[in-house]
Image 1 (cartoon, rainbow, N blue to C red):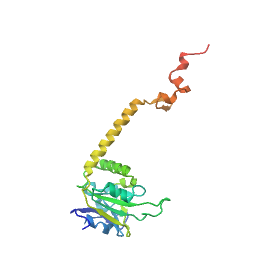
Image 2: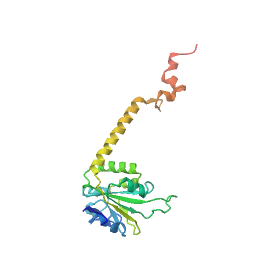
Image 3: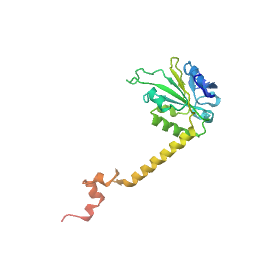
Image 4: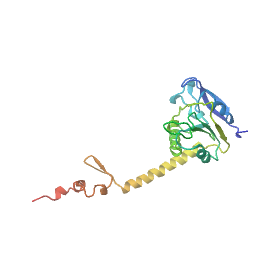
Length: 225
């Protein structure tokens, strides 16, 4: 058995780019059949089977997918997620020249501990944070994202713990709070001065310049004669 968890992945498949995205449920270990088919697929479920963001039934999804087009190598991704369950599949441009570069290009699918329980705003925040940290394709932050299958894809599975989306969100928000606090402290130490329509970050940046004299109103205090 290539995958041990008793988990069915929920996704939508279609031969079209937008319409007829029908929901299916398939054992996670059999995802390769979809990834190597001639279908288009999405890990979101859509109202009326029509793929657009306003139709996305976010809380029905139990997997997330990230694309790597010019970031991590396959070996790096495997090491980062070594403790987690995942399905990794190479894409059509893997190890082929694209944008004058040859590198690993692949898709990583993470099964979740439970269905997505975040609202759209929070889910997008977390997804963008993961994409930024992992150097994944920013287009994956779209919650109506679909992918092309590739019949020659190399598919790998790993069996570990399921990804806890809510815990990842809490940690991401805490990191953002810490960053904002550090930035606020830094801004206090480096006050911004607006003078004659120009932004002056610190007095040091205008020292020994005509602006310093103007800020100190030198011309009003001293005059010739």
